[in-house]
Amino acid sequence: MFFSIIIPLYNRPQEIKELLSTLCKQTYMQFEVLVIEDGSVNDAKAIVASFENKLDVKYFYKENSGQGFSRNFGFERAKGDYFIIFDSDILVPSDYLEIVKDYLFEHQLDAFGGPDAAHDSFTPVQKAISYAMTSPFTTGGIRGNKKHIGQFHPRSFNMGLSREVYEKVGGFILTRLGEDIEYSIRIHENGFKIGLIPAAKVYHKRRTSFKQFYKQLHFFGRARINIYKHFPSELKAVHFFPAIFTLGLGFAILSNIFYKPLAYVCNFFLLLYFLLIFFHAWQVNKSIKIAFLSVIASFIQLTAYGFGFIQDFVKRVLLKKRD
Image 1 (spheres, rainbow, N blue to C red):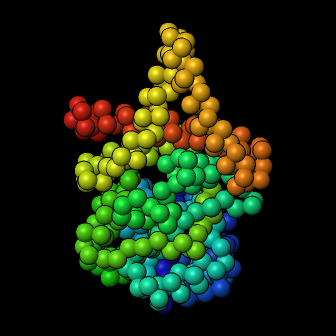
Image 2: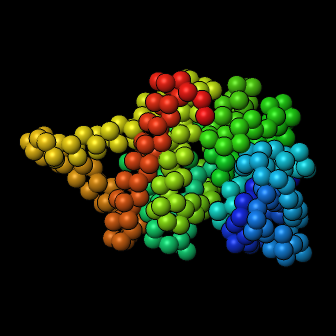
Image 3: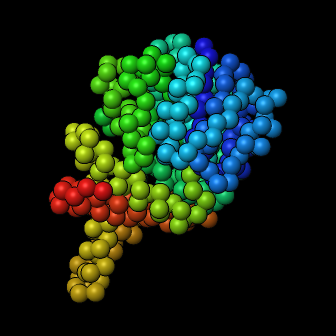
């Protein structure tokens, strides 16, 4: 089984260096790497070239078109039996391809995804963000979880598909705003089998600051409405939770200003919820500091996603405006 690893890249030369370094350590070496530089100003050509004696790696530079269409550019040039998509901000465990190969031989999936986790080298903020995106007490718990809700939709930071899927379904038709979920839905609709490979995890850095994390999650909230516009049935009750939390938070703030008796009730439940997150994060990461930061990260995740969701729900669903 031969894999083609496709990595879109935009102004992140240091990230691709770290990612390629982990790919050099794979225990299964039947793969090529295609790095697609998506119109970057700060390109990584020299860095990628430094790996040519260690990996079967190819570098392409193209005009900026976004991550989805950059992956299509890689699909068109890939030689593998399976295409694996990575984001540039991940680290890959040395046994990743070995795990995927063995699982695919046994289960014969047409497309797959894997979970993500925090690496020991990550900063406390990165570990807190990772917790917020994977915790059962935030919406992140449905990502890469064995007990996912409804159909499993691989996410593009860790996603694979067979050449047969690409030849029948084609590539991405969206380049951003939920393009991976839209693609997964079309793969499902064409009768292909998609599954989670639980052990095929990657270490996902995500964002290095809470400000960057807020921007990313606000974008994710908007992306969910974009998916809804293409596939209305894919908007589930769980997707409303961050918006409900955000509206509830606003209600709690108003209660503290105008009606104290109700404010006491709101404050009690908010405190209880964040204490639950704190103690669970403390148990997971064995660090009080990361537990405290995890409360902040969870708050940012819910409100940023909630604001993005509400913004585009009002604009595109209620008012029926287009971007």
